[in-house]
Image (cartoon, rainbow over all chains, first blue to last red; front, side, top):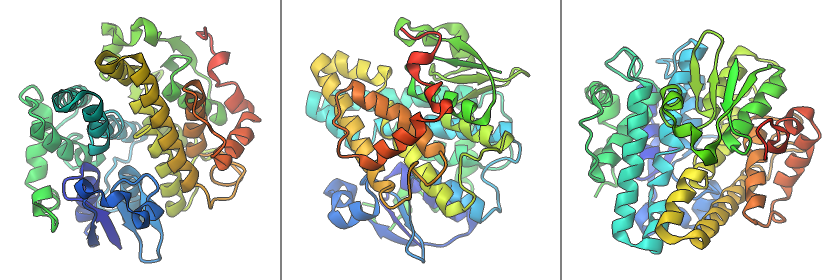
Length: 209
Length: 209
């Protein structure tokens, strides 16, 4: 299979982590977002949203949307599980993942910051991104406050950690003070000690700048 | 169980549809978003994001994030299934749902339109909302173009329809021309013929204005 991504894309980063946790190898095809390569006709034919990542399977099937890809990986390669077995806990893990994937990440990606910048300038775009990250992570900190560590939900990484770790990187880039999020930082430290997370980091990718 | 929602919230609307499709009855608690009732301390204690919906189970457990709630419903009440059995088709259904839930709905909800309005005024907010809806739905139209109808994915409604139908309502409110989306409109017609969808519509809710 081949993963179409970009080193700095949080959504591609999530899929890289999941592939590594599952021990599934993929070729990497790079789509340079700042150069607009995700808006090229050949890429839009694969991914009508013009977003990374896209996972291209060996049979030619094209999977889009990082969380759909990670759920597919978890269903087709069940070990190690990325979601708990209990439905209620699965819902809690998915809620944290979705709090990042719905109300945090898409509000501060290149596309939307470009819109804000065009309307109101760079300073407004930076303040917008900082606020989005701070509010999204603050909610996640509360959502896992009563869960055992060191990961977001106990002794193993889950889909929640897969979404939180890339977002913490974004938050730092936008200058968010993370000191109020001790549980998220605890989960990050546990994740970063695992090669599956460390090897998926943006700076380790072939297209890193 | 009790669903905390708001008649016009797309995310609450999704959960209402799913409950109806599953034949699961729930009390409805109304949180008036325009009056800020989702920002009240008692509600933030239930839902740290301050978003609707929240599903409160009889044992006191609190579920947040509409897609996590719908997946929980599908796992605990398997019939009728809201996702296909085949992993690849599940991924495709989830991708459409996420294209709405990640890059469309949260970019045009009350919270974010409030930010845009504050920065640039009402006209900019309306144009922003229209663009978000048009781009999100255009991508979904392409994602299902080769799928059999009448629903988004064949003969039964899925999680994709559950997300598409409320979003089409938003798009109309913002004046989006839907004539370029024949497959979405076909799915909508099929859904609206089902009481599970019709009864979940905003105008049928106890808090509708």
